[in-house]
Length: 436
Image (cartoon, rainbow, N blue to C red):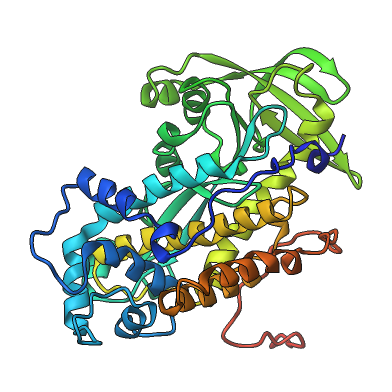
């Protein structure tokens, strides 16, 4: 059975529709997040700390506009008869908000959205993907001191690892640090946020017996799946079928020193699949052949590519290929990165609700992110200035556009993937003549 057919269709139910901006990001949830980091304000200001969350969302969705224009366009300021806020006050308020507060807002909002999204499942498991991405920062002195520069680049960079639910593209957890920090170190921080009864798919670069053992041991049915890394040593215990084996992996003393709970051996399952004459092998912790057929596992790993598409949606579509955050200080860079993830989840959850409007016939990844982004941006600008009587009509039109966002079936790859050569400053002379 094909994996896409095995995914459970979203049930036919629909949450409460939004009526104001506060329904998209509830103020009480923002206040709960601020309480976790002891972020409080005693003075009544024109730009409250609650409104700063919407400022960060606007910075990502309207990244071609100045911060002052975003404040007034979204109407998130307590005007008191004055239509503008000084730009210096905006930076000062962002510094007062800090990184931890917006991190807590992201965690609480993501938890609520994930609970309401009613995820699709494969054999009773939620499909997750983990992969890394880098963000370059502004070339300021503060950023240069805080973040490393990769060799041959001009900008300090931040390394980020995210965990994504693959049917909705909702980011469920994330961790980031300096560029020199290894991706597996960041992935370890995601273990505590991984839900039970889930299957997490990794790239082959995340192969670490200590990490995989900790991942599956931290809860109930926290399975993993990744391609077999070259030169990986294993011992075959027994054959479970054609192209399906139960194997034993042996850890080395260094891994057991880094991961004290790691045993000397670990049992895994090796599934082989032939595609166009090429052999692909994947390792997984799903060792029950009756519940998890080998044919389904072999075709399952292709869904990991959804997280790569999610990163493209963030950088290319939502940020308009503006790959450098505008913040010039490290603490504001980190704050802005959490704002990027929050904004992306905000759009993605509205696409989940659009699927509810389609009566469960489609999954969110089958809708156009670029089209949904355009509709949400228009809705955010129009709602603050709409009369109460006009809001239901706008919402009906907003969800009615869901059918126009359905994507056609994806085409199969025409040519095999290949590594592109790095661009050179000078053209190569192919007709060179050796001097005698």
